[in-house]
Image (tube, rainbow, N blue to C red; front, side, top):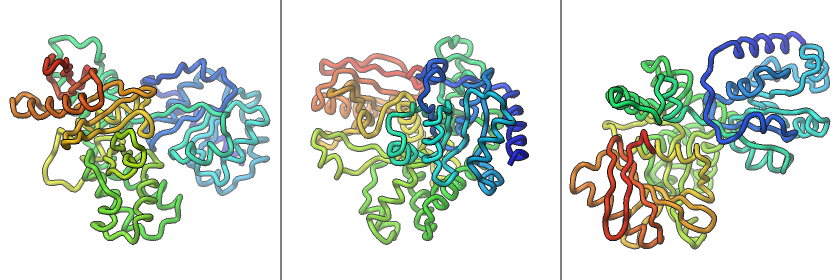
Length: 414
């Protein structure tokens, strides 16, 4: 066991020696570390959770256990582990547990560590850590930081540009980078090797499905699960009905389809957006729209003969709203009017609709503008909202229509 922990210390020190970009978060790191509550960093595999945790703890005396290690899991003995940690990291102030959901009954062990006064930083790639395991055993004892792949602002910083300080002479570079991000996404490990994005994300997608879903839930009918995942990544931004999915994909039951969809959300792979309605029963019955955590997965896995940049832009805006803290259960929805006009995103704050956001890749044609503006205004009338935004690839202007002021903004300014 001591050899395993010593090897992991070498791994930790090598990772700490690398140069990283500090990620954008809404939480003050020093304030977070000063709390005795468990610091929980969640998000999809390979999105930068471990790096964020290491950057938070850099310069501190902290111990490290990586549970993506089969030798550690095979030799697991909690009492021995704690004794060896004291030997390898004498006097450590923090304990970093990386991908801890791989350990059987990890939540009970973490609860015991917390009761014994350990200051814990935990990373995990499974939303179920929050929805059931963490909530049941550790209610009120943790603070969450959610890490997603690089946002557009972080992607620009990585390439030497600040979105808030773009000069006119850099316009062509900005267009090129924005298009690159739109198509290939923001997974950290391929920021410098864009030619490898598709093969890397093809493998990562399969790894998430097999390791975080099939293995975790002991799924036997892997064909149905894989068909569902492939269908959803090929139909991002479209509403899906569980009944129709069950029938069209030949899945054994509606309950199985619903369960598989939940499983594919747990590792932060897919998100589902409800249709806004003040009546919860009607909201629950309406089809939900499907989004994927990174546009690169669409390019790598989607079964499509044509590229739809409008859907990619809508998916990008959705993930950015999630990154800002909007919640698909409480504050983020789509809406369809009584006349079947649709607005892509309804942003709620407390009990009121704060803003409506429409996404349109190219709105330069009169016909397209009429359609998008008409839908937005009709939905605004029904929802009594005057804060209206249309996000485009590169247009910026103000539209005044029927008493509304609509801000048209390029994705780089959104």
